[in-house]
Length: 228
Image (tube, rainbow, N blue to C red; front, side):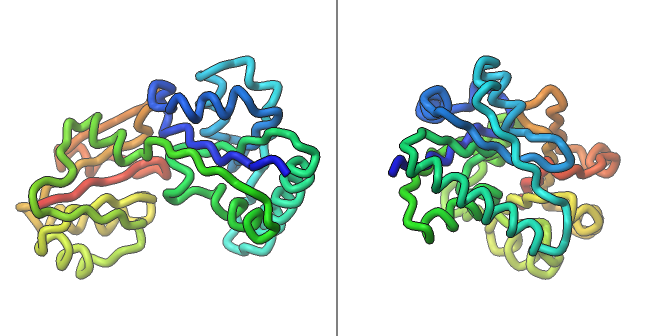
C-alpha cells in the first residue's frame, strides 16, 4: 500500500504553502480536492501555485445539506476509491485549504482510511487564524493569556466568562455568530474586536473598527479575534 497524503495549502496566499506540502502535490499521481456549490478553494490555491498540476486534480462535490447521510456516502465512496489507488501503489494527495487538522472536511475521509487500515500522512499547513494574526499585526497571546479557538456556535455568557477570565478568542465559522458579535460589541466596550475575511486572497479584508465591522457581511470565510 502507498500512504495517502493529506496536504494543507493554507488560506489562500501561495506564499503560505509549505515546501513539504508543495513537494507532496508535485510528487502525487492524483490530487483530490473538495468543492461546494462548484467552488473549490483548495483547487484555486493549487492552480495559483502551479498551473500544470491541473491535470492531476479530481474535484469531489460535497452536497450542502443538513442531512448528513448523502454527505457521508460521498466520504465513503472517496475512501474506497483512495484505498484502491493505494493498493495500486499510486501516490495520492488529498488537499484542503488552511490546515488539514483544523475544521477540515478532509479529516472525515482520513478517519475512514484509518478504519480501512490504509496508511496516511498528514502535512501541516498555516491555518487562517495564524495568517490573520499576521495581517492584523497581532500578538495573539502573551504572558499568561490563553487562546481558544471556537466555532460560531457559542453563547454570550460563554464568551463573557472566557474573555473576562483572560482568554483570547478566535471565532471560526463566523457567519453563524453575526448577531452575537454585534450584540457583544454593544455590551462590552472594553473588548477588542478584529474582523477578517478571505485572508490570503484578492478579497482579503481586515478591520478593528466597530463601525466598519457592523457593515460587513460575515461570509463563510471570515473569522474574529476578540481580546480584552
